Length: 150
Image 1 (cartoon, rainbow, N blue to C red):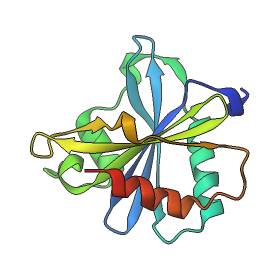
Image 2: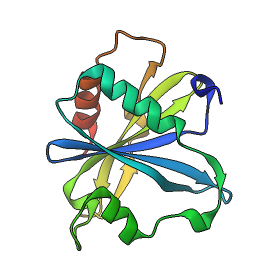
Image 3: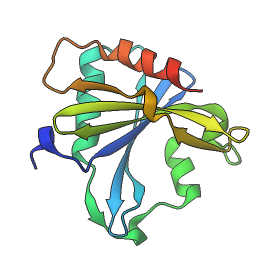
Image 4: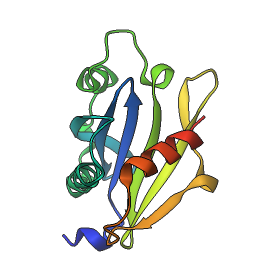
């Protein structure tokens, strides 16, 4: 797969306390996106190059046309995120999506709606960057995107 051109890859990054939780999503045969893993936890102080490498690794593992039965249950999803029973990710974490579209990484912030019950993408606030630009400070991009959340 030529990842630089792929249009079918997506990850979601959650900011939980002092870490980022990177979750790979794959597209099911029905067209819906489901958490497929892996789930990677990295420290917020991680250097920019490592953030970029983790993003690209997670995007590379995103697949298309997987079976719906391979979807995680909500309980399994929360367990893999390392959350305690009864804790809802929407209540404790900001999040944003990262998609790869025609060689550009698109960072899409989300807002928590309806008393933090679910996330809604903020499509007017997308940050789009060339995957080939090695001068980008991804730590600053993460900070900027997270400021646009909520």
